[in-house]
Image (cartoon, rainbow, N blue to C red; front, side, top):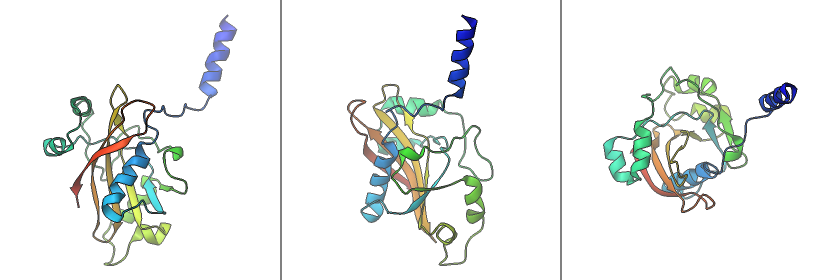
Length: 192
């Protein structure tokens, strides 16, 4: 019996982490489509994603009022540990994004690769992200904050598209059942 238990534990430890549940699959596709619809009518064919799922920084009361998201999301966000937008430090235990959560061809760059490109103001008219990665858009997406029922979610986003170009905010997503696709109910842009 002990040998069987030990074998099961060793097999479980050797197994790769499980793919995410359907609770989060499709969230980033919906957020990208909604955010870019306001900017350029479609998701660009090439962009780079900051490869870390940072925690959501809870929205201000002003943003919550405009989002109109369910009270459960607001209550869940209030339980998150206090964390500020990163400067030189990162929150503990951040994980990279799963590649299957993004459109084919999405490029990813770690925060360590991106930090030097964003640490100094570039000369006017230059885009260090574009120079290194040959893409104009840098996307930053938080880990989704999902309700217990798995029907509502909140994602914080930010994007940069060159000198004096970019925005950030929050997207509230909803789906009627766990088997239906996510749709963005509302996007609130905070920085523009």
